[in-house]
Length: 209
Image 1: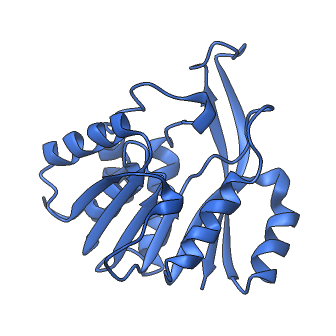
Image 2: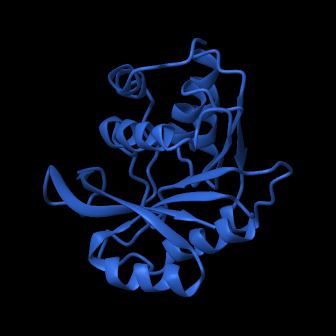
Image 3: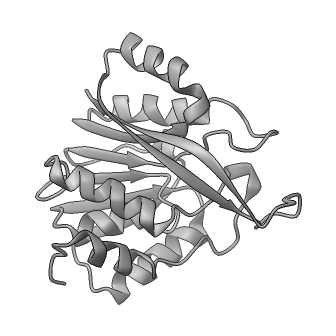
């Protein structure tokens, strides 16, 4: 497939990426909106973190970051997620787009070991948007990215934890180069949701290892 060269075209293509087929509240499965994914990937592309690079999408869900990276000319895009049904959707959609530089792995992110040099990691982990959600799941993802010896990390977190996160990254010798801020829409997909949509303030930290 021809590489996408305009941000708007990327967003339009990502609008077709399917949502999680059976979202699991314990995994905080919310599909990243195409407008956020395209903005983040376009910024990463401009910073030289995508084209010609080996990309890892941790907790990929239906693969929006891996797919976007592939569309922007990554050498290799690999998505990893524990949810087999979402992985099946990601595989099917990437085949529909005829992407030949992408693959998906079903498994626990914390157990994943790459057999290739990773340049850039993208991750939108469970970040505690629900009151009863397990805390610290996003930090587990950050630790895993460190173990994998990537060069650059883009990681979603709750904006309310910004001070803690900055201290955590600094204490672990991760150089924060950029902060991206988004209103992340949480749709009414679980029984306990009372609103049709709620916007959550999130940040994406770009860190250099």
